[in-house]
Structures are given as structure tokens and as C-alpha cells.
Length: 417
Image (cartoon, rainbow, N blue to C red; front, side, top):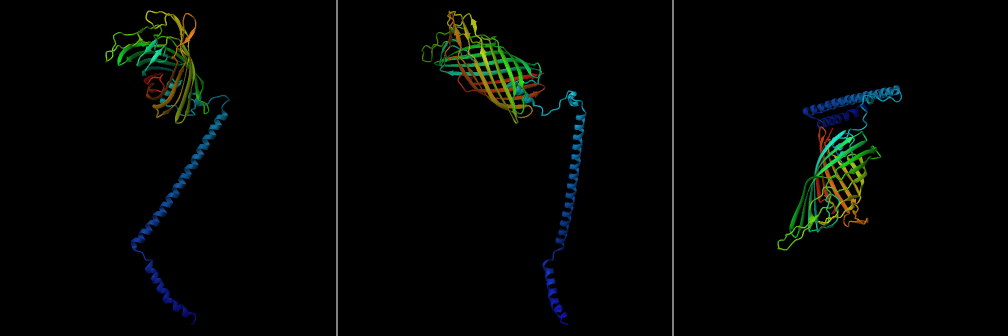
């Protein structure tokens, strides 16, 4: 009796709580269907992910097995080869490549700034234009770089335009030794001005100084060492020389005010130095992805030569000997291969030249004052490969010192066999 009474007392209260709980957590039929659908989709995705993971693990185990089997077979074949025998690929004339082939644009760049030994024979034609503009120019002697003057010149301004058409050929004896030749034809236009009066002197399409060069690869590029090439260059005095060319002073020149103007200038323009020259140097190329670094240095010696006349005075003949100053040229730069057919380069170059000397009948060498030179330029260029051995190399140089051209532009078309 005492036991059943508490049960009877709590029964109505429990029933009321159950009814209240049912009203609180009750859901609609649509919501219940959505819940069931979500639970089903989640279970399906878990099953699919587990299946994909198992499939990936199976493929990875198979890949590792095949790679291990291939490696074991390669090691077994090498162990069975007689000592000193090369692999089958090298016996068939196809050496195993340990790095990607160089692009065509890089090969073209190497040929222009260094030396390219990968092509048996290359023929090349080039066209360049250089402009000089000198204010308050007073010369008494030689300017022995591209623009050569001789004699006493005193004018307000000299403008010189030089167009060079040259033909070159490069032949590789083997993968380390190359010969090259260059034959230039030069057109020159000079304008001498004083007090607003101008005098023009032209020299059309004359042979310049031909060159014969040899290149030998001393070291191939390694991770710690650049590709190094030694060069030897001989320049022959095949162009017209400036020695013994008379100065002229045109008569009857007047300025805008009617005052007489005196302009003294050479009667003709030379296309060469008139001397033999021998130069030797080193060039370096280092590949540092994505750039290619290059540098060069060259020393050139000018050999003395005797001439029947070295005087610029009309009617005067003074035999003598001329020796231009030796020069040291160096440069460095970098290039980027934009893609397989085009590359862009930037470089700095400088040439330092000693004073020229002359020796007359007394046998004493005398310096020609003002004949030394310091020519520095900033250069940029684009090399483009058309394919089938033909490419195009353009260059633009900006002069940084008074002895260098104001600017130069050139384009070259090498064709390789």
C-alpha cells in the first residue's frame, strides 16, 4: 500500500511532461524528409571518398613497384656491361642528355657576344649606322676610332654619319675551334660648319679594313665556372688611310652677315686606319637561369708603318712612320631568353686607346696631342630566330663619352648551315 502510492502520485506528472516534450520537439513531415535526405547524402559521400582514397593508395603502391623494378633492371644491365663499354644510347650516337637543349635565341646570342661552336658554318650580312656630333671641335692630328680625321681642323661643329655594310663568315673546325672573317664596305658623310656655313665631304661605299679571327674554347661551362673562349683577331689595312691626305680651305665662304668664313677640312675621308693590328682577348658566358651573363676583354696592338707622305699640307711631302696607340676594350652584360625564338640583351662596353705617334726623318717618335680616346657605350639588342638556320640580331648603342658615337643602330642576318 505504501509502495504503490508514490507511483500513482507521480504518474500524472510524468504523462504531462511527456506530452509537453512532444509538443516542443515536434517537426513537420517536410523537415523530416529533408533530414533523412541529408543523412543519406552524407553517408554516400563518405563511401565515395573512402573508395577514392583506397584507389589512390592502390595506384601509388603500383607506381612505386614499377619504379623499383625499373631501377633494379637498369642497375642489373649496367653491372652486366663489360668495363669501358658505353650505354646503348651513346653507341647509337645519341648521348644521354643531362640538361635541356639551348633555345635557338640563346645560340644566336652566343654567336653575337661570344662564340657558338654548335653550327658548322655561318654566313652573315650586317648593316649599321653611326652618328657623331661634335661641338667646338679643334683637332690637330688623329682621331683613330671609327671617325678618323687628320690635319688641323678648327670649326664650330662636325657631324659625321657612317654607314657600314659588312659580310662575315664563321666556320667551326670542331666543337672547340672556330675561324671567322669580316669584310666591311663603308660610306661616310661629314658636314663641317662654321658661323652657319656648311661644307659637305662624302665618301661612298669604299672597302674598309678586313678582319680575320680565330676562337678557341678553353673551358666549357660548369656549375662553378663560365664558358671561356680565347680569341685572336688580325685586322688588315685594306681600307683607304688618312695619311698624306691634303687639307683644303674653300674660298668665297661668307656667313649671313657677309663676313668671310674660313673652314679647313680633309679633301677626302678615309675608310680604314692604314695599319696592321693584332688583338687578343677572352670572353666569358655563364648561364644563371633565367639570365645569361657575359663579359669580354681584348687588347689590340697597332703595328707601325711607313708612308711616303704623312703631311696634310697641300704641296708638301713629308715621308714618315705612323704608330697608332694600343687599345684595351672590355664589356659586360646580361641577356634573357624571352622564349625559344627571341632573346633580349643589355650590356656596357668601353675602349681606351693611347695616343698616336709619328716619326719623321730625324728618327724621333713624337706624340700626337689629343689622339687618345675613351669611348664608352650602353648597348641593348634583340635577337630573333626565324627558323631553318636564319635569324636576325638588332642592336642599339648610346654613347656615354665624347669619343664614342652619339648613337649607333645595327641589324644583322646570320644564316647557319
